[in-house]
Image (cartoon, rainbow, N blue to C red; front, side, top):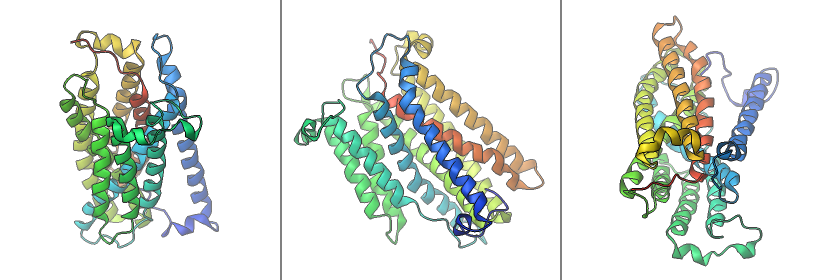
Length: 336
C-alpha cells in the first residue's frame, strides 16, 4: 500500500529499483518460514503439562492445514477486491500478477498430503503401501478429503478462465467440506457447528485474501486518490467481516468445551491454549485495523494507513498458521 512503489512488479526484480523488491522478497520468505514454525513447534508447546496425547504427525498436519487455508484465501480475496475496484471511478487498469494458479497448486499439494494421512487411518504414512486409496470412498473423512483434492484441481484448471468468478465454485466446495469435516456426526449439535464454521471460513477468506490483494493493487498503482478510496471501501467491509469472524470463531470453538469449565480449559488444554492465542492475535489485528482507519480519516495523506495495514497482513498469516494447529489438536471432551 505504498505511495512510492515502482510502476511494475518486474521493475522490482532488476536494476537499482530491484533492491527494495529484493528486500521485500527476503522479508516475505522470512515471514513464510516463521509462519511454518508455528504449526511445527506450536503443538508441543500447547500440549506441555496438559496430560493430553497428540495424534501422530500433528505438526505436519497442522502445517498442511495452514497451507490449505492460506491457499483458500487468495482467489476469493482477489474477486472480492476486484468487485470493489469496478465500482471506483477512475481506477487504473493495471493489475498485479494473478496468483490463482500458485494458490491452487499449494492447496492441491496440501490436500493430497492430508488425504494420504486419512487414507492411512489418520497416521503418518511411512511408505506408499500404507495408503489405502480404496478406503477413502468408504469413510466420511475420506470422501471429504477427496472432494477437497478435486476442488483444488478444478480451481487450478479454472484459474485462467475468462470469467474468474468460476474459481469461486470449487473453492466454495472446499469451504463446505472443511465445515463438515470439522464437525463429525458424534459431536454435540454438528449442524450448528458446521454452519458456524462455514460462515467463519467464508468471511476469513474474503478478509485475509482481500487485504493482501488490496495492498498489491495500491503498490501497483503507486497510491493516489483512487488507492485511498479503495482502502476506505475495503476498511468498511473488513470491519464487518472481522466482527463476524470473531463471533463465529469464538462461538464455534467454545461450544466444543464443557460449559462449566471453559475458563479453566483455556489454560489447561492444548485446544484451549491455542484458541486463546488465536483470539489474542485477532485482537491485535483489530487494533491494527482501528489504527489504519484512524490514519485513513485523520491523516493529511490517507495512504499513510499502509503502515498498520502491512502489519495487518503479517498478523493474519500467523492467525492462519495457528488455525492450522487448532484443527490438528485434540478437542476437549464435552460431557452433556
